Image 1 (cartoon, rainbow, N blue to C red):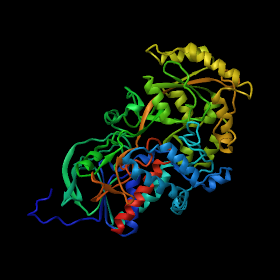
Image 2 (image 1 turned 60 degrees about the vertical axis):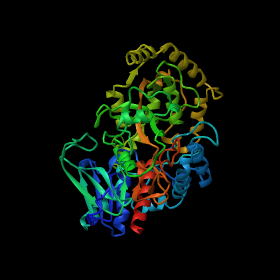
Image 3 (image 1 turned 135 degrees about the horizontal axis):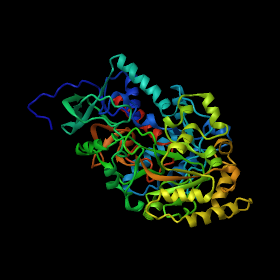
Image 4 (image 1 turned 180 degrees about the vertical axis):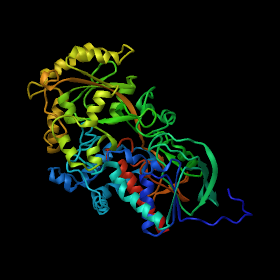
Length: 557
């Protein structure tokens, strides 16, 4: 607390933003538009400007868009609301603000979101993706229709207009970008947050996403009547992930890959809580089961997620086929729970070259150079025959891939990557042979084959996403491929509870004066806009929406 005998230091800025990721940059852009003075502080070097969004695939959730309608997809706000509520499963008193944010976000996604982004120069790939297809009930989890709109330019394309606006504000003297500034404390005076204190870290030439040093060379203090926490979640801190792991998802995995850099460490959440902010829903999280070790890593335990189509057969670590409807791309947390309750921290895809060419995409801007670099010639290669170049590179160099011409050779390779002897390849062989008999006719009782045929009724899937059903053991479809899949940490679904102006709330439910929270640090809105599960394409969108909301609220005073 401030010394009451000492006059407070004058505010240097109208707002301090902690974190130079997407949500913080969006908030800053709104403040610049309003002519406000802003300090943006980040513990990482300048190379990491933009945070996690730079690495993303750039998927955005839109409702009833022109892109959907051109593909014959009939969507509506009512249908999206049904899907969101069935997915979120709000059931706690702490969910009240998350539910309100969900309603506001749905109206945004069905309303001005697309026009607002297009006004900033963003464009979308014409084929809309269908992520999180759900658990098989109309009122349950999942997207009833395709809603995953890939940004032309992927994550960097989403960031570009906001980085440009902040840089313009910097040139105009409105923005001070201060890298290697680690916030250690929020300054609280008279119950209000009035600034930040922290440590200046030594310069570091680390490339984007790579670990940087934590050598302290000095300290700092910055005053402002508003502090916006935009520091992200906990996915790079496996100890925090395990400590928050809920019993409903089984035993925390002993081995995990990281889908985010190590600096996504969650430390600002505790700092905000110590200054009066209320943290909620820390046990809700979003991790993937289709992680593969990056053969060219940037950060420790660097993993990449496979964005799979629905055709690969999925087996657990013992060789048992996963039950319906746990098919690739259908139910992320349902699959995670199933594997963890069985005591497995890895699983297997078995597929063919024909499937990998059509159905495998890798999450991340760096794994999609055609979309990231807006390269039409390279994009034509994706639509044509052959696997995309980054996928083929993983097939050739990735430690988790087994490629073979015959099933016995494939099973031998899988056993070599299962040194614990747990894998029963005789069960896998029996399942593949039985599934292939079902693929010979169109009246299958195999629900996965039925789902594949249903997916191909959507023009986008038939064109570039879902392979025609075929026998896995057909030599013309080969070679055979097996992929060992790991748990991949990614997002926190809980965080600092906020009202609809992004003001941080305290234990008494009242706003903490001067404190705001956005993006993942705020559970993407309200401390948990997604509830228990997400519909995908909603993480970047949550950063955009909360950042915009906070920037406008602070600018309005």
